[in-house]
Amino acid sequence: MISSADKFSMSNNHQIFVYGTLLGGRLRFPVWPKNSISIQIACTAGLMYDLGPYPAIISGNGWIAGEVHRIGDEDWPETIAALDAFEEYKPHDIATSLYTRQLVDVELADGQVSHAWAYFLQDVTIQNGLGTKYPLVEATTTINARLCQVWNFKPTR
Image (cartoon, rainbow, N blue to C red; front, side):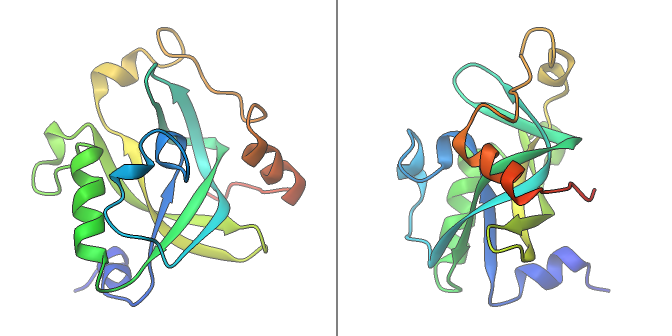
């Protein structure tokens, strides 16, 4: 039986939702090994925390603003491998991964809902400090997040 995530990864429409330092023009954007076919502003459900040098998201009833990068079939293997390594996601050893990669619903600026991979914080030690050692990033502090408000985005998970 093929899971929905496996079906998505075999499709011709590979998409990744990013936030924080991997956004276009930001500090870690050069990590991307290939150019995206398209980049769209988008929102997904979750909560973002400031870990100091970078943000992290976890599941939650808030919303996160970011970008959806569409990657071509020929560039997908190299791109996803580079991002997995950067995010310290180990598909064959999730227990020791800093992040996990999950398939999420995203709402694009044109109102369409699509699916994309996103990296969620996995490390329990860090999670224990969320809200105390690491502050919640208020959703209204970025321009992209304000766009999510304008779209009246409603998290669905």
